[in-house]
Image 1 (cartoon, chains in turn red, green, purple):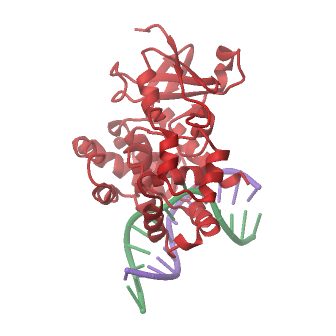
Image 2 (tube, rainbow, N blue to C red):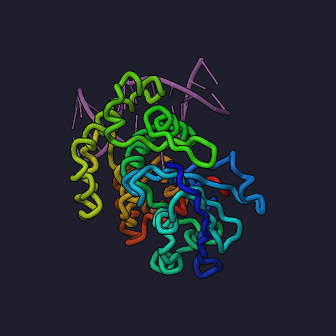
Image 3 (cartoon, rainbow, N blue to C red):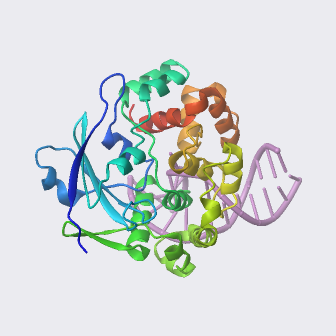
Length: 305
DNA sequence: AGCCAGGCAAGTG
DNA sequence: CACTTGCATGGC
């Protein structure tokens, strides 16, 4: 039952025309589906690059089972991966390696602020994560610091997710809607979910009972999808925007949280409409088709200067 | 000790 | 519609 671990490399674009920066992308606070794989640095001992790991959902892995995928970037033009299947297409999809960053940059307004952000964070990409873990992560995100959201995701996986052995270690898949729907609210509160516990439990139950409808959320107009997402308990405008951007391919989505509110006020005061929702609409209109990429660069740069 | 953290929902005017 | 408040918990 233990398949052999495969290894592979992926050439990634690099330079001023296009680029991919794995660490920047994973550690920017946009994805809660990847973690640093601290225990396995020796496997890439020819470099000091960090290794990151995810457990692919049964529904997204070609083997039909939860699968560990480990990725590192030993040089700017190369990714190396390990998994028990050919993980290349999954990695390309998860990190949007087919997006043409230069074209995206050129499609955005050419203002000096964005120009500076693109220079200093070049290679950052918007991740493309699976729907359910992203939905739950951002329901958990309200009034939480980013490191704590990671902790909650990890705790949920260890408590309710499938255990997956890989390379002598144990990893945990994020729970499926079925697995999480069975979690009583009081247990979720024990994991320090606080007031988010009933939101997580009820949302898991709803997704579990309507997997088919959930799968259509990416094929609607932005507005329709946004409206549907807000029907989940614990999902408002901001969480809906995050799920749309990070899991449903709506690259025009521009989530506005407390950070973005102050970033907008600092760099784009003319876009401030007094409320997060209205400011998000204004930003979406100003930045256009790839507003989400602009948001990503602005958000990632938030502590850099 | 008090305030804030990638908000949301329910209640008020 | 716009605005306020309660909601858990942890870190500084």
